[in-house]
Image 1 (tube, one colour):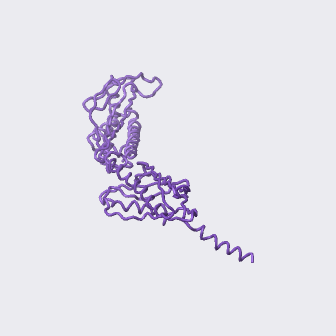
Image 2 (tube, one colour):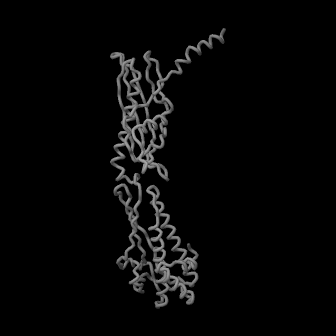
Image 3 (cartoon, rainbow, N blue to C red):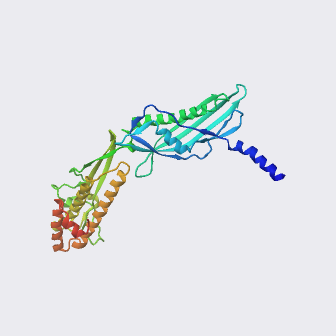
Length: 361
């Protein structure tokens, strides 16, 4: 008899526990607008996964859920309002930070008062991790009679629609000015002949080095007769224009007089140092050629530019080491003469002999 009583108790209470209020986001949109974005993913990032409680006509507490799942239903709901442009569409990820529905019964008015809160984050997807664009925070309050439970659906649909309208308005005003929404990168490379100063001598084929450009004190314990500090750099600046990133890159090949010195001055020694400077120019030229051939994506272009510069910098060090090693810092006159010819040819844009001699590609 105890077993039978226990089973009867389960039959009595199980239906009550299983009852819930299911949100239905399905709606009818008469005309879908074409947009340059598409919602690709909805992520449930809520700390509290329960949505909330509403009350039945008999004042039973009903946990709130979605027909399928919140992420799937919301993705379908958003996609009802637009069609993604086939030519170009930003892939948008949505993170749901909070979705909370609370309801209380007001005995004096015999009405239910409810509040729905929603917090979302919109992100642009690309080859790298999603980039944050904008957040939406909204809430709606409502009152309903006991027989109007389904009115909650309308309130929730209204709030989610407002979140879409907010994002839709934001992206239409920002897509031409927001860097993360750029459709392309237009790279402009500037490599002019620059005027030199006492502190910096910029490379100029019409201005060869003189010993007056070596102003540092000689290092008495160095085995070298002379040392030149020569290098190159790139500086960049960018802005958004008509949906494109206009990226400028300024190339500078230079030597620093105050970090360059000489012990015994001669025309032969000066030529050796000039070839060091010429090699900097050659490597910078090779980098500029690669820059102008780059196909840059908006999401990764800065890293790609940085990688190309670092590769060129490593190449410069390798070429300079090969030059000094093979000429024995200019002491081997025959090898020095060979390198002179190789460098002069490389300055014209023919790099085959230099690549073979220095072991670069």
